[in-house]
Length: 81
Ligand SMILES: [Zn+2]
Image (cartoon, rainbow, N blue to C red; front, side, top):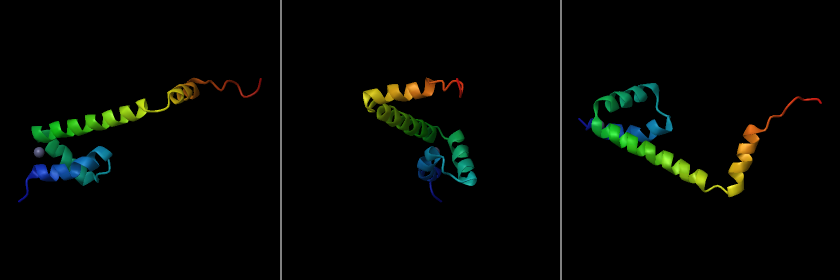
């Protein structure tokens, strides 16, 4: 019999990618619910991904974020004037 934590580690990356099947998802959630070690590892991996994502945003060219923000807030207004 294998260590359930080994199985959990196998599932971890797919868990974070949200690409698990329903059965695997339940399996991972169940294990994370009862295992402090894997829960901590999961949180660490998750924060690592958030950090990578944040860093990627910060590395965008300076004008780009502004442009994107403008696009988001621009009100197209009435179609005809
Ligand atoms: Zn575990």
